[in-house]
Structure formats: structure tokens, C-alpha cells
Length: 212
Image (cartoon, rainbow, N blue to C red; front, side, top):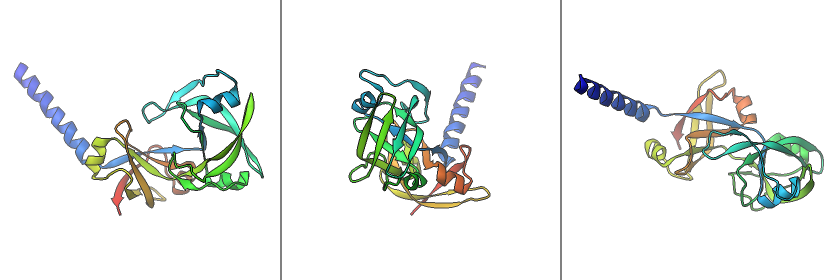
């Protein structure tokens, strides 16, 4: 009986491994406008020594939504309740939707997170102060987060440009999707809420890669 149980466990492990290998679908994460703050800007907006409050964990390991929000302002308008995501970063970054640029009256380039040179400007307002953010605003370029093991499974490398296909009433293919490989990443494709609404994509949608 003991041998039988051990054999059954090994069979189940093999089935699980094969299932993971053959499953080439990727879950989708839908992002809204948000910001990442440096320690300096947390204190500028919320007061000296202020610590952000975790609201809930996000799908990417170590990332979380904070209870706190800020207002962002441009020459032609403002947007309230922009969620802060933690943890704190070395450099502040605000990620907006394309339509937000028209509302604010700013120009924000389509970029990957962290690519901030010559990006957009906006004024951030918190409960204890304000700060003009220069070259810190982008519209997030769609991308896929992948741990190393999944990059090998999908046969892609960091920075590779791929297309993604999805089903549904508005199913189709999206091009210009950048693969971001990191040993600490969780497998997930990120598009923003405007793209998701236009294409009928929800958090339950899975996509597959089509290599360019």
C-alpha cells in the first residue's frame, strides 16, 4: 500500500508538471491610473516621517495598493483619488491613462515603467503639501511580467516585443507588448483599463503569446 501511495503521488506530480508545461495561457491584470512615490515626495505630500498604509496586496510579489491617494493637476484640469502603490521607490512616477492627458492638458509619452527621461509633468497635491513633478508622468506601455522559468517555457527574453491574442466578443490581437523578465516577477500581462474596456477584457481573461 505504501508503494502504491508513493507511486500515485509521483504520477500526480508528473501530471501537474505536464499541465503547466502545455498551458500557454497568461492571466491579465488591468491597471488604472496610479502613482509610485519616493520617500522625499511621501513627506512632501503627507508630512515628515509619514508612513504609507498598506490596503491590499497586488498580484506582483511585494507590490501593494496603499490606503492613501493624491490629486494630480495640469494646466487644464485635475484628477482626484489617484491611488498610491507601494513600496516606495527611488524616483516618483505617475502613470495615467491616455484620456487623462487631455483632461489634464499634459503630454505623457507611452513608456515602460521607469523610463522617465523627458516624460510628462504634473503637480501632485496631498493633504500636507504639493510638489511639481517634472519628467515623471507616463502612459503605461502594455507588457508581460515573467519569472525566469516562464520565460524559458514561452521561449522569450527580457525586452522582447510580442503580440498577444485573446478570445471573447471583441477578441483579437494586440501588438507591441514588451516582455519583462525578472526572477521575482509573477506571470501576468498588464494592460490599462481603457484598453481592457475597448476590447472587452476582464480579470478573468487569459491571453496567449504570438511571437513577432
